[in-house]
Image (cartoon, rainbow over all chains, first blue to last red; front, side, top):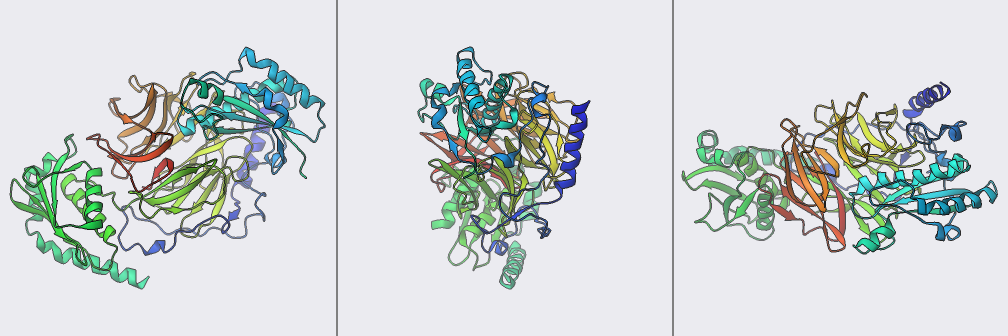
Length: 216
Length: 395
C-alpha cells in the first residue's frame, strides 16, 4: 500500500515536471549546414520544426529536469519486489571520481546470456560488501555490467544493466544500502578482451566494481 | 532560399515538360504486362542495361538501382534499357525491351548536384517499374566507434555527405528518427550515465528526454511523433516505458524482473513490439502503448530474437536472431510466416518497406549494408569507412 502510494507520488511528480526541458546547444553539436536547401523534394513531407519553449530549462549541464530525481525513503525496503530495487538518485553519483583499483580482483563473471550470480562469484560480493560497510559514508559503489559480443547492441545494453542490478540486489541482501549503489551498463561497448573466442567471451561477461569518491 | 525555390520550380517545369520525352509513359505504366513482372511478388533480380551515363552519375545510378533489386547486365540480356546523358544536367529514358516502348523519360535541371539528379532519376524508376516510393534521397543515422568512444553520424542512405552530429568524446547508442522530421533521439553517456537526448538537426539544439539512475536507452518515436517508447531501469530492472515527446508523462508498461529492450511502433500506433527475457531467453513480445498484458509473438522457429523493427506499411517485422551467428529475419505479421534472409544484425526498414539497412561484422568491426528483402541482394556501403553500427533509416 505504502509502495503504491509512493509510486503514484513519483508518477505525479514525473508528470508535473515532465513538461520542462533543458536546452543544450552549441558545445559538441554540429548543426547540418544549409539543411533546408535540399533542392530535391524529400520522400516524406517534413513539417515545420516546432518552436522549443525557451527559458524553461535550468542552467548548466547537470541540472536535468524530466521527472526525477526524488530521494526514495523506501529504496532499501523495496528489494526483491516483482520488478527489482528502485534506482537511486542520479545527481548523487554525478561527476564523482571513480577508483577501480580497489576492486580489480572482485570482478564477477557471468554465464552466457544469464544475469544470475553464480555460486563461485558470491565470495567476491561478500568481500565488496564488507569493504563498503567499513568505508566512510561519503564513499559509494559503482557497479558496471558488461556483455560478450554474442548479443545485439541494445539487447546487450539491457542485459548488462540486468547483470549490474543482480549484483546490486545481492549486495543489498548482504546489508549494503541500495542508495549507495549506482549501476551502469556498457553492453558490449567495452570488452576486456577484443578477441572473438570462448576465452575472450567468458572474460567479457562481467560485472566490475568502482569506488565512488566524494566530489573533489 | 530563393535559389532553392527557383530550383524546385525549374525542376517541376522540367519534369512536366519532359514528360513529352516519353509519350507512351502513361499507357505503358498501366497496361504493359512487363511492368507487372517486376512488381512486388517477383523475387528475381531485374536485369537492366545502363548506357550514356558517366562518372558519378553512373556510379550513383547503378548503386541506387542495385539496392532496389536490379542487376546491371549487357543490353542483350536486359529487360529494360536505361539510356541517357549527364553533361551539364542528367537526362534519362527507360525502354521496355520487349514492347519497345519508352516507359519513362525525365530530365533534371542543371545546377543541382549531379548525384542528387541521379538519385531523383533512380527514384522515378523505382516508382515506374516497381510501384514503390523511391529511397535514393533519404538519410540514415548511425553510430561510429573509434577506439573507446563513439559518435553519432547522419549521412545520405548511400553513405555520402556524412556529418558527425555529436562530439561528446563518450559513448552514443541507439539513434532513432522522429518520423517525417529532421530530428533524432539517442542515448549518450556524456555525463557518465546512459541518458536519452533529442537533437534538432537544423539548429543543433539538444534536449534531455530522460535522465534517471540506471539504464536509459532504445528510444523509439511513435509515427505521429507524439510519444516515445524507451527502456528505463529506474524501477529496478530494464523495463519498457512510454512518455510524451519531451520525456514527460512517463508510464511504465512492463514490470518483469528480467530485461526488456529495443521497442518499435506499429504504423497504426496501437502496438509496440519489443524484446524481453521474461521467459529466460530473448523473444519478441507485443503490448499496447496504453498498457495491458504483454503477448509473446511467435517467430516460427527463430530463437534469441532481438532488435525488432516494424515496416512502415505494417506488414512485416524484421528482427535479429542469434542461431550460431546473427541472422536477419522477417516476419509477415498477418500470416506469421518467417524468413531468414542473411547474416547481419540490427536491421531497420527503409520508407519503401522493402529495403533494410543492417550491420554486418567484418573482421573486428561493423560495416553497414543494404539488403533488398525480396531478392536478398546485399549491397555494402563502401563510402562508410570505420566501425559503423546501429543504423536508423529516416522515414
